[in-house]
Length: 183
Image (cartoon, rainbow, N blue to C red):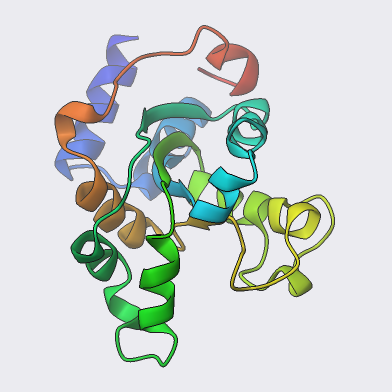
């Protein structure tokens, strides 16, 4: 156990890289643990889908680290969607996101950024496969119920925009060893 902690601390400090440590399955698992930002949009809230959406992530074995129920300000939404500011639909998107409360969340798990996007489905529900949240629950791109970070850098930016470090719970799931081999 001491070796695992030392290797993990070395990885965090940059002394070791994932490539250096991936010969040990446990270290690989620890290195791939990520956090991502997920937000239920106003249409998802109004349709009563909060519990169903949260259940999909819990059933997959991911850990909820933070969650709020709030009315997002125009300023916060403009910061969140800043990379879309020049697009013709930007003002409509910000207005839509202010139509009602949203549920911003932080989830943690192995390779969660990619896996969460797979659970959510394509941005356009018409391109989403059955079994995905958007494939099962949406019909129009303008009402696609949920946002999920598209990359690890985006997740880090979005998490820091919506949550303070103190709002992120740090705990272990009792079921973790039954979900993730080596934990």
